[in-house]
Image 1: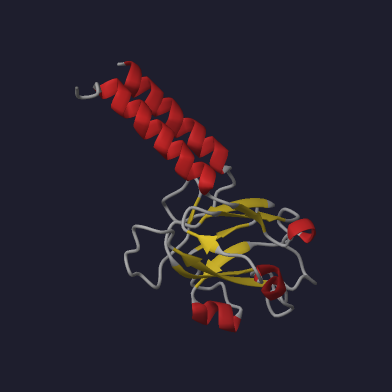
Image 2: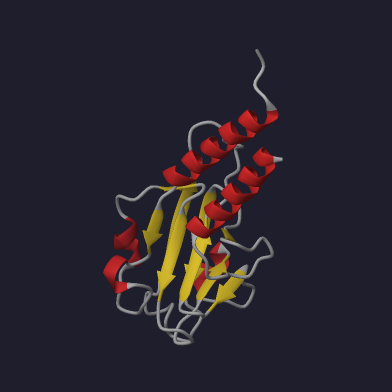
Length: 168
């Protein structure tokens, strides 16, 4: 006996929530947050960043930025050709593509003082597209600017849509 469309949608909802629950949220810098005087290279040691994980940058609004840059921007501490930038004080970035992602604070002197982060994002089993580069799209915005949000908000919204579809 074939399952009904609502049952299939409920199964899809459960699978989606399970995948979202498997993602990890990383508080960048742990208790130190995104600030000067923190060694972000040491912070990444022992961590595995996977597609779907979220980086949460907590910092003083307008005192710092979270700026995603290319490798050359990272090496030169230059946000001139940034992929995206935010200075709200609470920036969440969901890593949606595998590869190396570079983040700096573009406030003069901060990046040169060590306020820079590089993460290598891996694809979880199944679905590796062979890509070695890519861009991290911020949670809640596919347009390229960083937007403060939480992954639970996105999961709740998706679940609501799927439940409504299952009911109709």
